[in-house]
Length: 104
Image 1 (tube, one colour):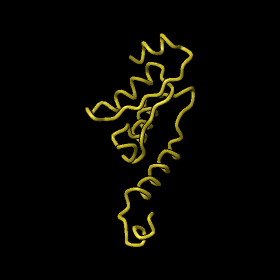
Image 2: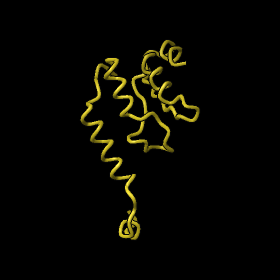
Image 3: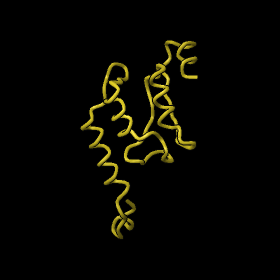
Image 4: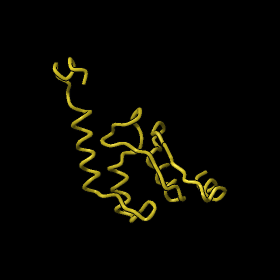
């Protein structure tokens, strides 16, 4: 499908939003990039829209290993890991009473 879309609409920017409901989110994201999509959606630290989107840390590792760029640009590994750590600290910390009472 990605190949056909890129062939039929060469001037359109396509983005893939691939959930992992059937265990294929990461694979579908990679196939879309290999076939010319220049945007994908993902999540940091397993936290995202309904979760189950491709994890950006894993995509970054694969991109680095295979020299994959998007629009000629590579992800900055240190920024990817910083974002993942911030996400874990923000969303996966155990709530305490003050956090709950403050509505945060």
